Image (tube, rainbow, N blue to C red; front, top):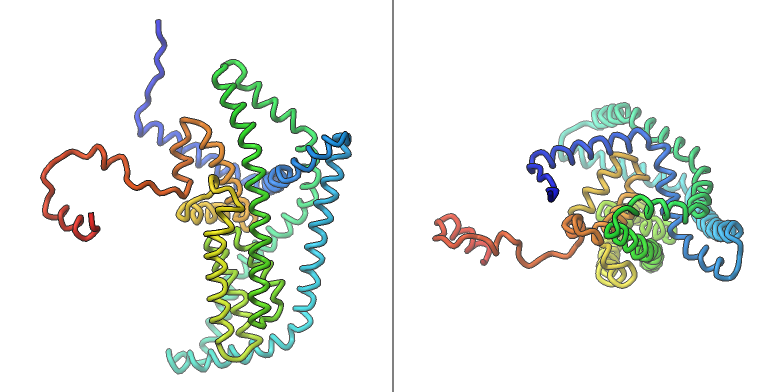
Length: 377
């Protein structure tokens, strides 16, 4: 007797999927302090794995290869942190002068606001103080999250070492789970073998893209004579990982510094123009050629994913959301049942949807004719 696969109605399947997503989000939110370092460790382990494999080909023992790779990565990270710290120290030394200039700008703004809105300066200060008091709890919660994250950062190197050490054990687990079905086993083998290279290329591409954007940002700000150009350029490149939201913040920071340190508004206009040009180059040159085009997430879902990541895990979740979404797209594209989800995440826009091919031939209504005329169809 042939067995049939039971087809459940759509409302039942959608309810189960939504319930599963709710449970998943609850677990991710509740276990943030545990899972967040693990997530960062997974990404870093993926980045270091090619270097470990290269050292292993040179007959370096596994443990030594992992430790050497982690040492090289640590030196690079410490060098970047030292450079940024020196730039930040230079910024703090000039902070008193910046504070005086900022106070003058705030005074001018208060006078302008009083003329426009009729709100007295005393009332403005009262509203500002009320806003600060209302946000104290949010600030305290944010600082608490930062300190909690810093306390767990020391676990990340341990996780990286263990993930690289037990890499084969983890991969064999995925193979053995599906060993009973030959076809499924081949699919899992294909996913693991092809996705590994794609994920590593994607992560390396993100780093190379950030380096290129940081260089262009710094050069543009140096030409415009903006103070702390290199620091702002690197921060802008890091924020560029966050689509659209990060780009807006990256432009706002140098514009704010230029407003405080320079007279007039020509520099601010130059910053906006320069950053828009850099964004155009990034989106049309760097991303297609440096970062794998097969892993690009479309603009709509990029914003939604970043906001969801921020709601779940704060700032760390925002930075983790896009790389993990790219990893999920790689997996979706290699499983037949999940390919529609991979296409939904991607940025390839089809010329027409399937509904147009199956639409019944009938005489259109007046309203439909109007819509077609407006849309040019």
